[in-house]
Length: 144
Image (cartoon, rainbow, N blue to C red):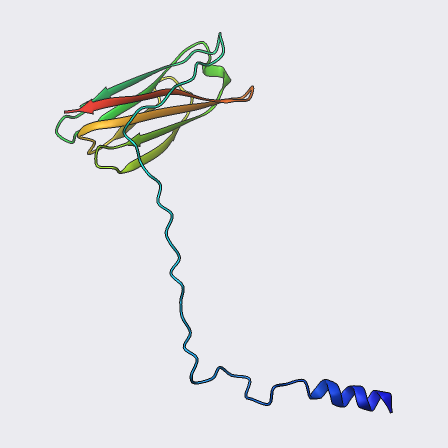
């Protein structure tokens, strides 16, 4: 008898209306704000890699072509080239466009950023196999 009472009470838990949405309810979509990252052309502080792990980069505006307003970045090596795990390059163009590239720690490895006329912020961050990440370059480079 208890089983019958429980089964009847379990079947009668609904509100008596249809399971679908009512015709008076209007679904609303909430607008999700798109996160915006502020870009800055102001250089920030840089860090010095530990002694014996120094590295060099060549950064030249207007090379290899002034016609296409190129910005040239090349890895030139150094005592610490064997300790580099990866190199991250970030260029913020004068237009606000941000270009990110990765480079290998191979002498002569280069990246050319096209259409970079004006003042561009060049940031280079290296990660070492011994641990640690260092922003070794953060400067403004003018491309004629």
